[in-house]
Length: 638
Image (cartoon, rainbow, N blue to C red):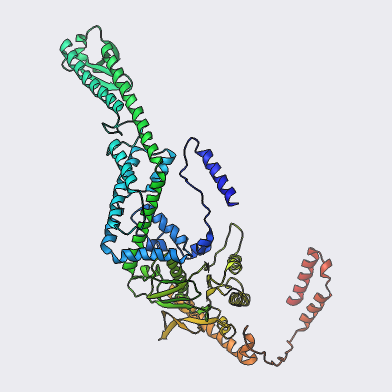
């Protein structure tokens, strides 16, 4: 199927580009098993290359890591972010290259300075293959080759990438000897090819220049012949070359002059001699423009023969650019080199969210540990909104992703067992196009996770089940957690406000509770952003509402209602036993059947109930139903 799809795409492109080569050398099957899998929902939730609000790269992982000096480097970095590696040797190769640039600061800065002068070779190569290049593109290739040779020289014995320097010098010399330094944008106007590159072209230039000199001689001769000192030979695209004489001197014009145009203050004439030289000059100009275009295509054709070399050079320069950028970021942001292993364990000490720590201004970022191993595979994370649960979970995912793309990571130490897939279920939104509700979208994403995750996957679940009623959501959240724990074994962090889920710790062997630490003093709540062991028993929703700016009247009323509801809950739990309300309690307890108190019913109400009981609902017409309803209503009123 992949081969067929590739063939169909190629056929379509060839239809669009008849008579042109394609910028494609080979088609290779890129096995996804070589890369960590990131589905579109995960890429969006983690904001890897585009933020969800403004659709720009501000506040994304790309925004943090991209200090590349070339557009080729930025494109490669974006590809690396979306395609983290699974091969430990390849990951360690990138780590080693980053480490080299971290240690060799002067070499790194010299290389980055050299990369500034390199143009977008990938785009230029594509233009040459498609035949849309101009002379300025060739000059850009020449300058890029010169700068790339300087970068290779700076790297010295470190062969971060290899290339055929001799052939690159040949390409440089070809363009250097053939194309002028500042050619025009158009390829049809001439002025692109250097003197000395082609003998025929040089001869045409000589004719063109000497012809113009001869026209000046004609002008001088005609002035002397007619005595008209103001006589000028001019040129325009309509008449070509012509003699222009002021109206005052028109009586001095010889009879052999042929009038071509009369103006308000002047007359314009031509002569056979002038037209003959005009033909010579214009023919030479046309031939020059045609020959220069042909020579430009000939030079480009020679470059097409070296496309593989130029593509390899572009790839190598982009790689060096990305590695140097990652080294620069690692140095400035205090990143460390993670240890990548084949095992299950994930241990990150003092981890930080790479994006959030760059956006937090004027306060210290609170780092946290993340440990998931054979003893703790699932974490139930509780705590108030706005306290940092989502940040903590995304932080873990981004550190794993950065580590497997070969980058250094924001932590004091990190040991990361290879992860094959990262899944995220974060936030809630309707899918209006497919007609799916918020809860349907949520369940669809969870279904994708439980159907595709493995014991090597990393899963983030944020508030799963909140899109439906409390008991439905709690039941689903519990069942999903148990399924992941028992059947998948994936490393999982489940953030929830269902505090009842914390009781799963007593039931599931590899599950642990963690919470966001909160400080309460003088009716003020402070979110400490610190992750500690144990479950939370409060959500602090009213405090978050206060921070959001809700009026004090609403907050006061909410507190009063909360106290009433909590008091009711306490009474119910005291009467029937709190275990009976739990989904995960121990053995059921015996509960006395409550005494049923018969409500007092009036005579009128009894009559109405009797009338309703006698009704044959299936045979009532809408009109009969309305009349009966009106009759019953009148009984109540009267």
